Image (tube, rainbow, N blue to C red; front, side):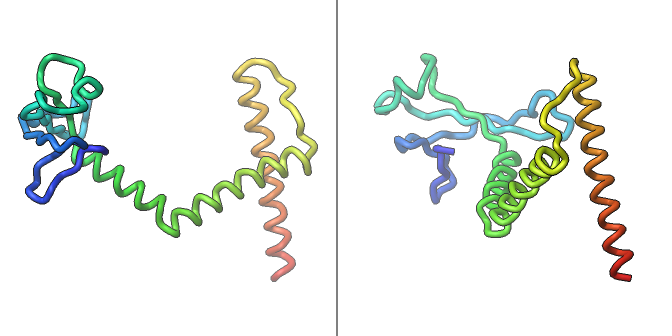
Length: 146
């Protein structure tokens, strides 16, 4: 994120050092034939961040995946938009409401079973009961409206 591309299309670090494309390679373990680009700094001798940035005696190399970077940018733009903020707000309200109804209105305070499979079963049963209750109320409302 700290490495920006300037007007000439050259990747630059925060200190202004230029990074040049060395090669492209396929991402290991990837089924979608994605590629990453490997960039290397041209000269690190007079950089003020050398001790913090570099861990080896060679020049610094970084790997970029353009597809992944564009997906991250799109996700951040979606989250920061007005619609994204509204969806996040709505989601937080919905999940709290459901747990509040189950805990307070249905008097379900604690899990009584032991073991992961039994706990999972109990949560599923409570969730199914909650969904059936919602479905029943919806059917009653539709019947009254008709």
